[in-house]
Image (cartoon, rainbow over all chains, first blue to last red; front, side, top):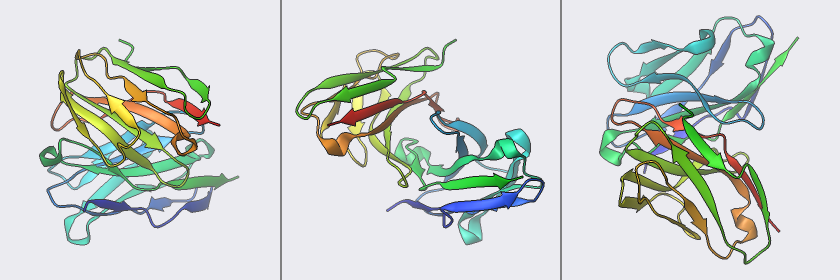
Length: 114
Length: 112
């Protein structure tokens, strides 16, 4: 069965500090990988995506993520967090073979200390 | 270009009532999806469609039905609402392989 694990339910970082959110997946096909962000009461906004090629992908708002096939991971990073980054972050996995359906992790809530 | 729109934004239902959540996209996307989001659980797929006239179950389809008579619309029907269906519902659409899903703003449903 396909699954996505985000081990950290909550993370608190200080403004200006670096950030890494972890994502591990178990999937039966070559995956597409996504990170979405959700502010309270809002919909989901795509931060970045990986389909193939360069395993380090850049996204919006200064975020990046690295696909490591050997570790089945797709961790999200940002070198310097801003207070406006406080939100919930979801990792998701899909594949063409499975109708491009997405399997989501449970999410990581990011709190930023000033 | 409005993207993916959902109506209503909020709704309170009594147990046993029925309703339809509307989803429309104006991007001519073939694929459409319905997810529900519960606290601490991420999003779970309810139903999806790969084109007009074609629908299939996702991970949590019980208590729901869908139809896809046009490319643009993908309504989700709740029959005999139950408190377990209290959730936030998101509709999404996808152009095709090697693209990302676009999400609507969500419908917050409470069943009491």
